[in-house]
Length: 244
Image (tube, rainbow, N blue to C red):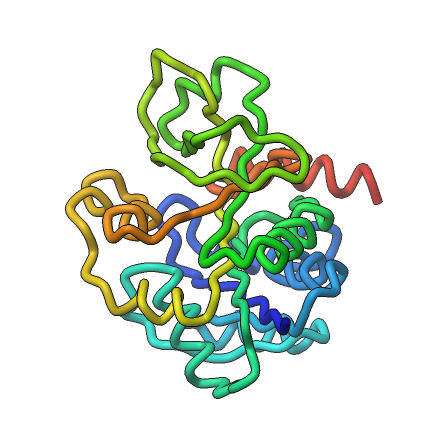
């Protein structure tokens, strides 16, 4: 089976404008993500961006990028436009990686791809163990609740995704915003209207569950910090520059 990795990206982030081009160790965040995706070695990697500056940066650093519309409601819409524009007829799976997680674990990317192929899943994502209580209470941290506990080589279905504080933490994990779509499921997903549940919670994955599209979840090795704020950026910069 053939997988295509698409990384949606834009400069107009509300909390940290211009974040894809912020530099860590001399390389932009978006180009760090591209390099991680390429290291996973599961398929071609393309950045889908609405800003020419991102395209230029990615290409300058040896990556591939495609310009997309600037009026998409979600990252998945941007991913689908890129897939359509590229016109590749032999793609079976499309992996949607977050452009603001330069510390993602390569094994988690390959593991999700392998589980999708093995279980013939329509849509898959990642969840990691919640190791501190602050994460349960943080409304920016999305939680996923699964039918069974997440263990190695298990790929249970998600029951719900939420930002709320949960009283019962059974089979609840930190959701990592990486998705892998079977191509027909991606087409179906973008053709559906945004559901009330999705709009109310600002979680596009609820559109899938509201339309009876199953989402399988595999256990991630680690829970990378995403770059949402200036503080996140400074923390990640410190870790990554120290490691190098």
